[in-house]
Length: 228
Image (tube, rainbow, N blue to C red; front, side, top):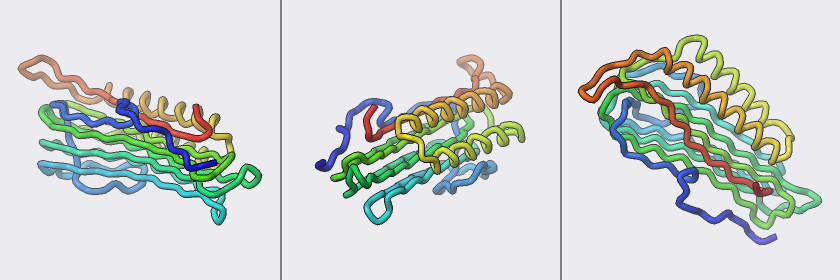
């Protein structure tokens, strides 16, 4: 099989870039793969990046990695967050197939009223001369905005930690790519539910335009071989 790469489109599932005035907050720096990170002093601008990359070939038939990061930040005027997953399978055969899995879950919380947010979430899976290989890249970005800063309570952190553990187990599993996709999608739905429960307890505020309410937005993109 020749080198294959799914064609790129301008679909919002492939890349999300937003500049909006919403309840925001952030922190400068690159994320580390930790279950939760406490709020820090908020700068005027913030940058956060997560990237998971895997490359399977004849020397390393199975490569699987995941990241699950949680950041809770203070108010900023501008923030840029990026989440990316890339998986490559190269040079294997149908009789000796490769498996490459890259999964990145990114949770960020912002607080404030007039923050410009640029959020990018992308993934890409490629088979290069790799008949019968299984390649999956999944990027999930959860953006939580609240009127005023708040931190996840112990119960929320425990639930997110549990999802992280199950994501690790799925990543290490030998499930077929199609079933793995389904299971990962289920975990993403659980994260959204946990975050919605958390923001329901977050303080609300009143502005000139009315009551400001917390919100949760999920940006997702899955790419893989075999295809959908």
